[in-house]
Image 1 (cartoon, each protein chain N blue to C red):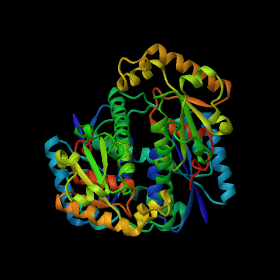
Image 2: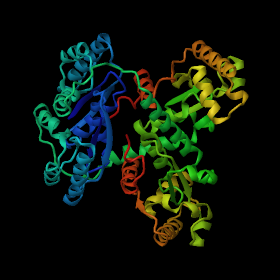
Image 3: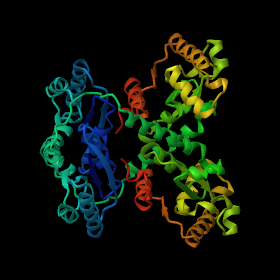
Image 4: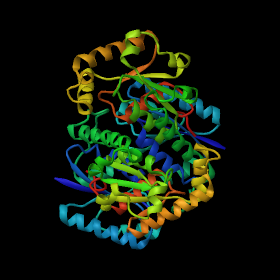
Length: 273
Length: 273
């Protein structure tokens, strides 16, 4: 059976969707069909959302689940007329927190961003640009500005992790690909020698690496299992020799890799305000 | 007054943090200091978390707020001994949903990912790589594979948006920079003519564009306000002439830009299961 789940918000819908997916993942035997309805910021849009919910109720033959983070009460009242089951994300917690914090929450839809939020956002975009500019060892002279330098063999997960850490946490991450020449040396590449405290290694199972490389360059020496095994063995030896923390990305998502790195190396970004 | 807020999880902590930040943003008069504690997956780690919470309670002179998505009851009991105020993210909803769905939730920590989740994740990483490979009009011959092609002048927000849509929604997004030659032509660039249905325009206020460009290339013609005004005016004329939907990125985050694009053009990624 497939169960429709709606995420409704007067803004992007990210909070409703993140929470909703997480909560619903605990019902492993049910398949959900997720529908995001962002920017429901007027009574008219709410009415259209109700139509979609009621249509889904009919189509799927079951009561849709609704996660909403709507603030405006008029809009909420419209959604409440639908055939769905509403999980109220905000009210549930706001009441509890009002007691804990001893303050009333403010209730405004689509609040203008404050200067601090603007600055935090610009910092994140600067960090994404930094990751792009410093991808694949492109600009070794800017490593001073990096908070983390990811190292590993080609296709071990450095670039997506750099971008994710920049986008989500505003952390400046450069990355350096360990080439065959670097690995055969068994020394720390020159460009990295002054930055040892900021190095973090990524490794991956050779079978998975060979599969990824085969997608990029089929039938190349680069993608051969034997070649991948050699590179990985040498890279891990290098990490151990120089006491560089590293982790295996084979079964980890960028979210998981990033959270692990941040929990291990305590930088500003982790304890972020 | 600064108030400490902890986000605790046996996994990445993303759900606890996203929800927690969203809920706490309603208390505009309080400054929060956010501390993420991911991978608290053992009683020992929970005890260390409790120490950090209690230390924060002392340092800040106030009761820390804790958002947790912990599943294991032994770990939760340890956290409950701390001096913090616990907002229980999961239990609150699981009980409600159990009634609505007529099923019991499964309770396992760090569940192994199913093949569907794996496939969905790989698709997201493929989409990030697609965005990187097709950035800035790099490979015009792969536009057939793009689900969206973002167009706009240099530094109007195309690249971060492409990456975000790939990373978060697994959508294949290429982007094409409108050059001065393209704009003077007042025709749709040749590379785009066969893909009109997939085009989406980004624009930006000239003053903001000049500021961004000045950071990249100070004192260049490229960064002059006059030049920015000309390009923007021509780009918007092009969007209108060819009926291309577009939006102004000046005051919008990548999350907001992405959500708006997805809510306007209905593609597989929006109604994602």
